[in-house]
Image (tube, rainbow, N blue to C red; front, top):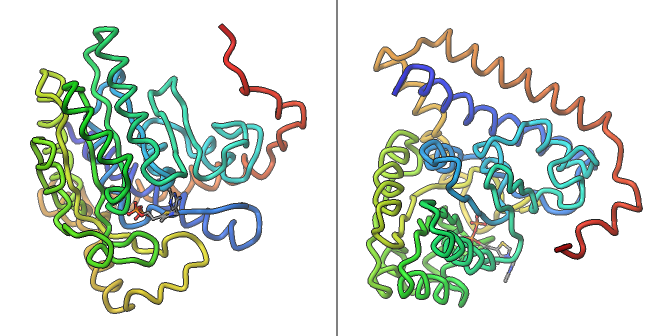
Length: 319
Ligand SMILES: Cc1ncc(C[n+]2csc(CCOP(=O)(O)OP(=O)(O)O)c2C)c(N)n1
């Protein structure tokens, strides 16, 4: 990796964090409607994974999707405008927080129904097999989704058809207010892949470089024809499930313990300790990200609402 690659990972994680901190404020001011699920604490997961994907590789995720969107190359402006429901947003203000997508960047969304995007991921990969594309589809979901029928159907078919899918479970230990121990018979989620004869692994999701390293191997193997593989990522969300979660299901001590293990802080210390960068240089990246977010908020606030006639667009596919 070049120095600029290391800095780019840092910049992306900080940008996601700052976009979401501002989004939380705008939500409290009533400027963002609907649900808002923050990715704060989990930034190293999508940043590490997506840093190794090729442009032809498809990325699909659930509703905790703003960070994934940024890692896929969407601008802070497009994301912020979508959060505010503006016509300049990536989904023209029609999708909001949970439905960001840009297929020109091979980012297939943003899905609100738990588990529902897993069969879609299998379908995307099947399409690539039909068309003889050498592409990998990476599908990200929470551990809560692994108790849903879609998960088992999609994993099974992907193995039967040897589809090029990387299944990534972001195990942040809670599905809304329910801990993994209360909801899942098997708490080491990667074991569920064994039931489908699928190669599987676990990685520490607080360490962006470890995530990147394993992702590189898995993308390469799947591209070379290994068939589907499963990666469980150990992570934690620092904020509530969505805005307005009173968080009665976990202690503030537990949250603080994890916050001491902040993926951005860990990476910052690592870059300095390895003499890859300096505090001053990294702080400059933070300032750049903050500037980008300030511009994104101004852009979103000044942007127009979608017009009513836009409601009739994108309803039917024209051949
Ligand atoms: C089919 C379905 N059932 C229930 C819900 C309500 N719901 C939204 S998020 C969620 C928890 C999912 O947890 P997990 O998959 O672990 O993802 P995380 O929120 O931790 O990222 C539930 C039950 C839903 N959106 N869809």
